[in-house]
Length: 169
Picture 1 (cartoon, rainbow, N blue to C red):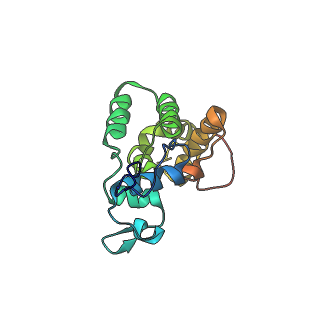
Picture 2 (cartoon, rainbow, N blue to C red; picture 1 turned 45 degrees about the vertical axis):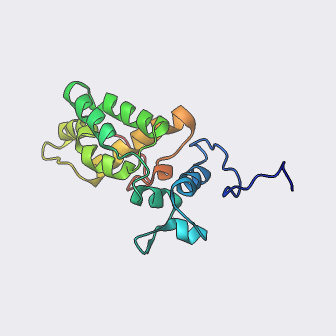
């Protein structure tokens, strides 16, 4: 009777969202892959565990790339680059790439990223070892680079320096 009306199972459209709008981007990813969502809580739930964010839910659902390629990139860079260059690379990766678990990547490479700071510390105290203060100085340098690149702080990536001070060696 109504030839211009089509029957479809489509409720509406989901528009493209840039990854810089993280909340909407991860919500869109979940809406495209989770069958029959009934609420936001349903979208955040994976195996009866409610995730804190849509991003965490995407990770649990296996909808985001893992960080293996970023780990491989840093591993290869460790072979031939200085810690300063590694921190530059890590800062650029945080800013430009969508690393799913930046804190895990930091923890895996924090000694390589902080090697020159430990060296400078050993010039003052020959018994210096890697510690939270050394790592903090490295994180502060990375944050300074992120702020200069695009005005973003480490806390945006769920990484934060251990101390509020910004003393340098």
